[in-house]
Image 1 (cartoon, rainbow, N blue to C red):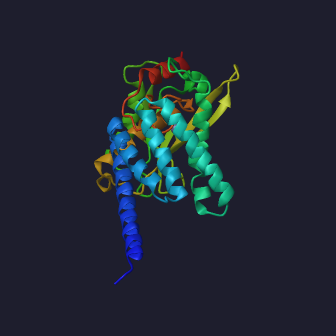
Image 2 (image 1 turned 90 degrees about the vertical axis):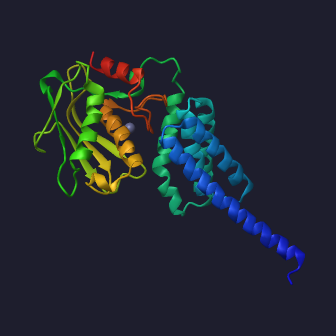
Image 3 (image 1 turned 60 degrees about the vertical axis):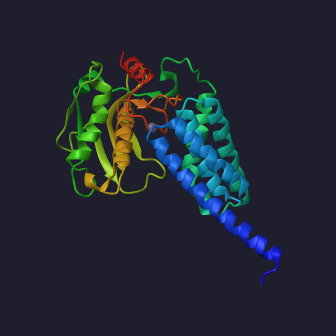
Length: 299
Ligand SMILES: [Zn+2]
């Protein structure tokens, strides 16, 4: 028979193992809930997981990811104050981790994400909840009148393209900005060569980002960048829409509107989590402030 002290220790260990499993399950459920745009409910789940993680000897990389994800949920729910505290905590934990474990692969793994966190925190130093647009927070790139209507081509090749369903979701992203607006005209292009905006697919290489927009521009007489071409790269493993579940297709929808905003010349991010041009927006509709900013860019 085991001495009672040993038995107590084993029981404690298995209890904490169970707590850890529960905490991770709560964390995953919180993420799914947040990405389904149920922010208040997500926060409740994050807080439950947080209580368990805090009582356990949780690894620092997991805590960095968790704290960042909880910060996003608070921001999306409209509690920016709490979000900023948590983003700062994420940055501080990462900083200590880099100092203590410089060789750990998580140092590089989190580098892109932490660049984004710090960029966001610096945006907030001058942002105001009453801002009616965020033109001052972005690099203003413009498509000149001579370029209209822009030709937008979505890659349809097997290797780097999208099937018809995915392609339509992507084109909807551009429609979201221009339907009912008259500041910018575009048509669906058919060839890669003459595309002004080209949308293509990569299987990896974008780090934690789902998409990336690159520009080629020239400077006009006023010193402002004039766009010549833009390429959107979207990170997805397959061109086949049947390979994705509803949550993944919804994420593509949000990403397509966001990257279309970049490609139309909003180069940068809104500091406000209620805008689709927020750096990690899962939203499916443009805000009034998004549209105000787009109109001002072309006014
Ligand atoms: Zn972006």
